Length: 363
Picture 1 (spheres, rainbow, N blue to C red):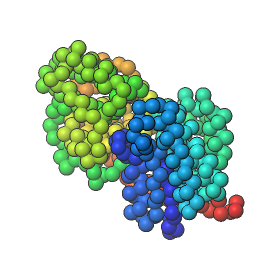
Picture 2: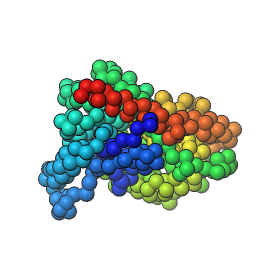
Picture 3: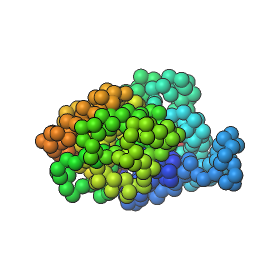
Picture 4: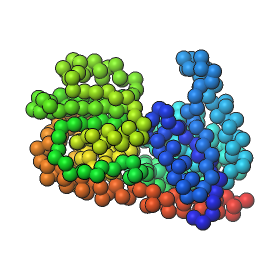
């Protein structure tokens, strides 16, 4: 795309560090590297005044009103709005208002929907989502899984994959002998089922007492998961590191020998892509969009959800079969090239150009 645009990018920003927040921050940096002007409008700005943080309804209002003011101001001088969208209240409170305001301002708006819970969300909110999407210029999603989901609800979508920064997520020695350091990089929420990963680790540790597990995430289940670790007698071998920033997360992958993804629902988990880029073999549940990005026995080992026994068996296979681990690593390093910025930017640039020309033609 030869044309330089002023883009308003709407979405969550770290902290806290997480998949969508990291992708928003990274996208802004990469767009600027292409000469685009980017104004960030965070959908998770700090609560002000701070005392409203503990009052649920009031804090939402105190975040929403300044957000709407900033959106109205910034969309008045930009040429394109790019909205990072998710399900539930995040959609209704932040994504939908951004779409409507961009429409009122007569600015093209790209909706970049993410999240593995799209099916249930659309089933419950299809009418309102349809109405809001009628005001958007284009819908892009990161995977064939989400494309198929939206099309079942008669909303066409184009695929623009997630982006992995290979300058950060890399491993100069991906073929070192498999040790027994396991890593989970998902938040401590029910949909990510860290409990199954912990129970799988307990099975592994009965055979390999030197195995260790790091869980890099935070969330409402922190206390319950810590209690489970204590009950299973794993306190000396499980570390809850909390959410890590991008550089610390990259270091954690380089220290890991096997990455686990125990999700119950998923779209295109960046944690899986980052593990592949870091030369770490992956054991993941076979849910949602995961089989769209990795192939069982080729680039990862896929197991049923909520099956600690199956996950443990896959982990033990990798520990006991270095040739299998090397194959997954090599094929994963090749596959992840499809998610680099030089491959993704032309697709995104074409979407921007089409959106801009469409609005110009309508005007």
